[in-house]
Length: 532
Ligand code: HEM
Image (cartoon, rainbow, N blue to C red; front, side, top):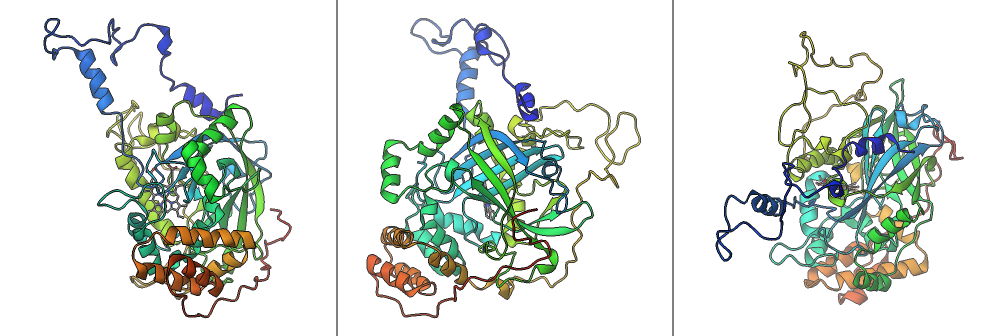
C-alpha cells in the first residue's frame, strides 16, 4: 500500500515520455533531433533553431554543486515504526503509536571523496534520515561513528580543508592518507578518539545494511509536560555490524567502485529490505553532570555500561528512488529540522551545524525554495508567509503574506497556545561572552584508550596496520612523530608499534588513562532492562 510520501511523489511524476512524440520544454512536438537547422547542407547553424539551443542549454546546466562534504551518497525510501509509545519522554507524534508507520528517506554517504569516488574507502559514513512525520519533517543527520573529530563547529572548515584534496593539485582523492590530514590531527588532540575509529575496521563497512548509525550529539526529548531528557540516538542494523578488511576493500574498489551503492540497490530490488533498530540512551536533565566527560562534547560517547541503549522502534528501507538526481542528490538534510518533542543542546558542534546546513543548501539547491522539491516536501501541510525567490513552484493565493492580518483570505495566525506548536525548551542561560571552552572538554585521551582496550587482539592489529599504512605515507617526519607522541597518551605498546612502522623513534612513555569500566548509573529512568 502506498504511504503518504509515495502518494505525494506520484503527483510529481513527469508525463510518461512514451505517451507521444518528443517535445520541447514548451510542449511543442519535435520532428527531428539529430541535425541542427542550418543555412544550406554545409552551412552555419541558425540562431532560430530553438530546439537546438534549448537542448544544448539544458545540457550545459545539468550540474549543480556537489555537497562540500558527503558528496557521494546513495538513498532509499522506507518507513519507521515505534515499538511502543515514548510519551513519558517525548511528545514527538511519530514516537507515540506502534500502529503508525512514518515514511522516511535515508541517504548513506562517504565524507571525503567527490561524487564520483569509490565506495569502499577508509572514511566515516553518513547515515542521514528524513522522517516525514505528521508534524513536519524531522532529520536525524548522523554518521556511522558515535563520535566526531572536533568539539566546536568553528573548526569544521579547517578540518575539512585538511581532510579534502590538497588545493594545489587536488590529490589525494578517495583516501584518507595524506600530509594535511595528519598535520591537522597531530596538532588537535581532540581528534584522537575519532581518528582511532577511522583507523579501525568500522571505517570500511561491508554494506550499508551492516552499519550502525549515531546521532552523535546529545539531543533532548521533551514530553507533553515540557520536561526535557537528554538523548543519544543509535541505529543498529538487523544484519549485525560487518566490515571489509583492508586488502578486500582495495580489491573491491578496483573491481566495483559502486560496491556499497549496488548492494543497497540490488537488495531493495530483490525484496531483501535493509532494517535497523532505533535505540536511545536517556539521561535525566538533573544528572547532566554525573559523567567524567561533558555531555555536550561530541568527541565522547556515553558508555553503554553506564547508560543502556533502549530500543524504541525499527526502520525498513523498501523502495529505491525513481531518479538519482531528483531525490538522492537534491535531498536536503538539516540538523535544525526538528519536530515538537525533540530539541537541541548547547553542544557547540551541533550549534554550528544548525547554521551550516541551511546556509550551504541555499547555494547548492539554488535559493530558498528547495523545501518544495518533492523529496524535501513534508507530508504535513505547509502554511507560511514566505514568498517569491528562485524556483518558486507554488501559486500562493490571497492578498496577504504577513502576520498579523485582518483581511479576508489572509494567512494563518500563529498556533499560539495550540498544543501542536513547536516550543523551544525553556532553559536558563547566563555567562560572559568568551572564546574559551569549559575544562570539562579537555580530556582527550580517556575514551581513545577505552576504545583501544575494547578491541580484540586482531582488531588492534588492524588499527596498527592502518596507522602504519596511512601515517607511513606522510612526508614530514615531524608530523609522523607528533602523531606517535599523541598515541603514547593512549597506550605505549600502540605508540611503539606505530612508531616502528612509520620510521620514527619510539616516544617517551606517558601517563595513560585508567580504563576500568565505570559502573552503571542509577538514574530514576535508567531501568537497566532496556525498557522505555
Ligand atoms: C553533510 C553528518 C558535522 C556541515 C552531512 C551529511 C551527513 C553529515 C550525514 C550528508 C547529508 C546528506 O546525505 O545529504 C555530520 C555529522 C557531524 C557533522 C554526524 C558531526 C557530528 C558537521 C559540521 C558542519 C557540517 C560541524 C559545519 C559546521 C555539513 C555540510 C554538509 C554536510 C555543509 C553538506 C550538506 C548539503 O550540501 O546538503 N553531514 N556532519 N557537518 N555537513 Fe555534516
